[in-house]
Length: 137
Image 1 (cartoon, one colour):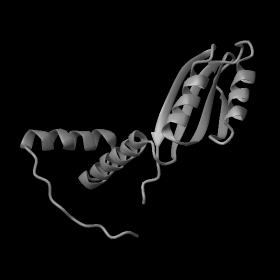
Image 2 (cartoon, one colour):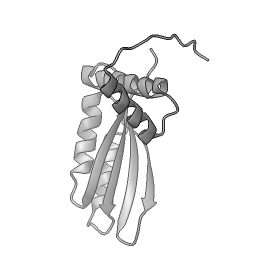
Image 3 (cartoon, one colour):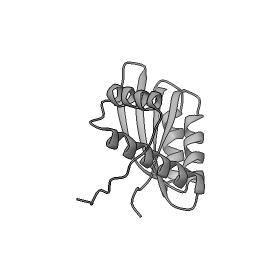
C-alpha cells in the first residue's frame, strides 16, 4: 500500500460544515477520502483538457431499438473507430428501450468525436460520456 502523508487545510467554519454534510450525504468514510476523490477528479479533468495522452470514456446510451437501422449505424461507427472502441455491453430495459455502455480509449478529441457521432444518431434518446483517465504517472 502506498504511503500516506498528512497535511492540514484551514477552512472557514461554514465551509467545513458544508464539507461535512457533503461527506455524510455521499457516504464517504472520512474527509480524507472525499478530498482524495476531488483531487482525482481534477487530475482526470486536466488530462482531458491537455489532450496529450490517451484517456478513457464510458459512453452510456439509451435508445429505441425499433429505430430503423440504428443498430447497424452504431456498429458501423464502432468498426470505423475500432482503435478507440474497446468494448460494449447491451442491456434490454423494456420492450422498446435498450441501454448500451461503450468503453472508449484514445485522445480526448477522438473519444468526444466518436461519442458525439454515436450519441447524435436518430433514435438515441439519451447519451452521456463519462470521462476517466489513469491516475498514476
